[in-house]
Length: 317
Image (cartoon, rainbow, N blue to C red; front, side, top):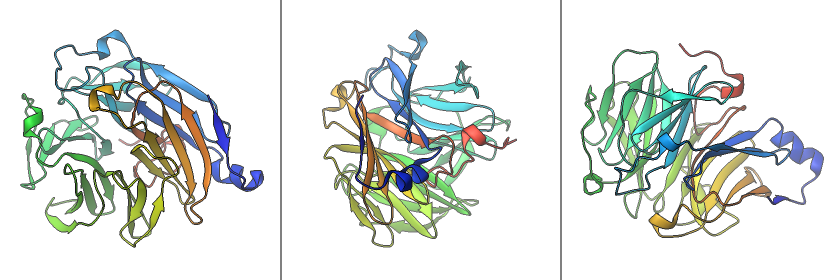
């Protein structure tokens, strides 16, 4: 493990990173996630179990932990069709009984459901955790209906939607779009489109909202951008995916650029960038994880998640 520190004064740096722990889902098929204390550099891994490998999956890796979200009691991690459940002590306790789809991406808790971005169904799938019914939002038709599990294929993926964020009365959905990306701004109650945000770069991932400004990773441009014209290049060339934000810092995942099937090997990095100055505060080197798929902050407010921190969360029932 290599943990690099910028030349910024240590007292200022530690104040900004105090109590900041990040969980990143990873691709090596041996681990589900890596947890990093950004103040101390301490790292731990959550091992994948044999039941996490689905050999019937042929179009993507058979164990692919991705989206992460939680309620006050439980953490949920998407793994293709599986929704893995962990308790507050990070012990694995089982799988949700509602199946998802191959290549499910980001997750977010909202009003009694864990919502999963499902690129192959072009929808958000809401599975109940304290509610009683499963719902599905057809993103491009802006219609909601009961969710019925079914087969899906890579060829059904129209725009490769991958990220979501609820902010006040808005729902933002990011579309990678296999090139020039865009963000859909929907009404959080009616799911009708309020605006289409374009000129956001290419192959984008991640969304954060802070003080009326929307931020994201322009993966193709290897930079953090915003609706107000913010532009901050990342400090390492690579495949940028995984995004979190506090009032002081951005946290971004940068992985090696490889063919999709080779994303299970190699290293990845977690970069911590001071928001106002753009300075690289720290970079954490994750050895042998393969690509980072998603990341969340565990114990401080994450403006890319919008859910109370898991390690100090109020119970959301």
